[in-house]
Image 1 (tube, rainbow, N blue to C red):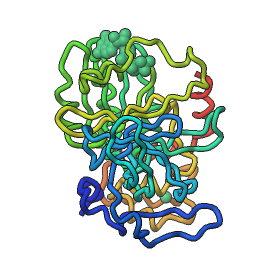
Image 2: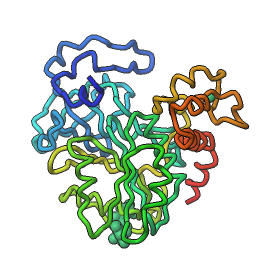
Image 3: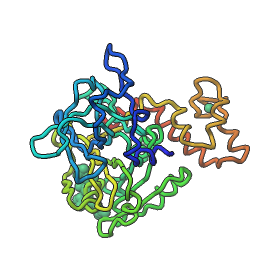
Image 4: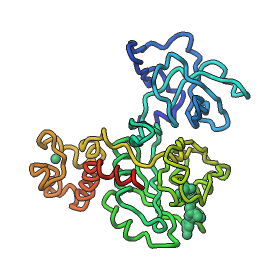
Length: 346
Ligand SMILES: Nc1nc2c(ncn2[C@@H]2O[C@H](COP(=O)(O)OP(=O)(O)OP(=O)(O)O)[C@@H](O)[C@H]2O)c(=O)[nH]1
Ligand SMILES: [Zn+2]
């Protein structure tokens, strides 16, 4: 079963899928505690000041508000997490359930540390796709942002999808050409057309959306989720100060699936990603990378002159463009310190 199938199949969420992380100084509890035998599975769709909104069985109509059970220790609970709930799961006003378990994640999207929080944190769990929303103009596209988002997606286990907005203002051809070798889906949208291709892509799946302020993300989300009422046309959240923490929220698509809007992500947590984590998303290079010298960054000359990835191209198993694209992503990770500074000063 693929992780995607397994996660969709709520009834199979048994002990083997559940990892209970040990809190500080406690031993991992691997046995299902009998008093929680009646726990219900739910997906976390919202988070606000110590309260988590959860959709029972992934059903957007069965919402329950929950708090963390003490036994959860410090295990973080984020949007997209699959949790087990006990207590009052009726979902009636003023009732509160308790989250007693968090299932092992099939994917993670991290944001970088910032002034308000010195740690990289997972902000979205279990999303199948990352929709990277970039405007073709106003604001102009920045490949640095796209590349870092791609690295975060590949390393976090999300399938990246590039969504180019405002096609009425500029042609998408250059960007499509620049990313052709990555063979990722590229969708082009404009405000005066229905985003049918995007709808099709997101149908029945859990997708996280990222994008800089002003790219038209809210405009898109409002079309996809008519009840979402995401605020549009706001120049930027920066005006409210960098200390406004805006958390992610999962919105149900009318025909099934969820979009997770992530206003809080300004840049991606790439600090703990290794070159091999990125190469792992490029099947045809994985074997050759195992032959590389220890600690190889896979960048080729001059940084990694003994890198074996070039042999995949000379043997005809990958195109030169494909390797160049992979290496551009690898170097975007390598330059992380500088790019963080660039983003932080925006
Ligand atoms: N020309 C053109 N303008 C668009 C398009 N999509 C959105 N806009 C405009 O771009 C501006 C920003 O759109 P939003 O949807 O608010 O952008 P956002 O990415 O959600 O930005 P924040 O709200 O700051 O997070 C608004 O004035 C929109 O009307 C498009 O396809 N073409
Ligand atoms: Zn190498």
